[in-house]
Image (tube, rainbow, N blue to C red):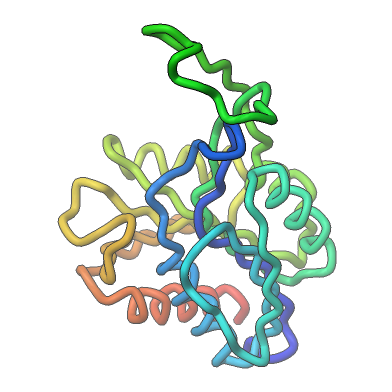
Length: 218
């Protein structure tokens, strides 16, 4: 069913440089995105994988991988690729803020005194931007990692960003979230669907997500 479908998938973290040594990042390992990428590729989709820095090699003849580092780079590549895609699934943990200025030299602790102020500016909203340009024939999905009011926050994101479905997981759940080999998700659809899944290996979670995607294509 996915054969001949071109799919954009983002995965991993982004790294926002402070200086040549330090950066702002997060704990995303890219494992969930990698699992989805392999599931899609094994179902014969034509996949463009835009990946932040991870240790995972997503090698498959159906996968074209584009490596990026920053939120801005991921934004530019995603906008460029999305126009020719049938589907986009954004799993990447993109930094919400980036340093206003990057130091070209390593910032010395001794020169900054007891306190040091770092000014941050918002990064571009990749998911929201794709939602604004999404055409009727395209499907768009995102992820929502929450710590409180999980369903409420995920549904708000679903509506505001014009998504067809969203995958919600909570850091309150043991075994879910960053760096683990397991995840516990709820899929929420714009058509009112709510499907709760038990804790599973991320490869099995990827199977469930792609199965749901195929029901929308039908």
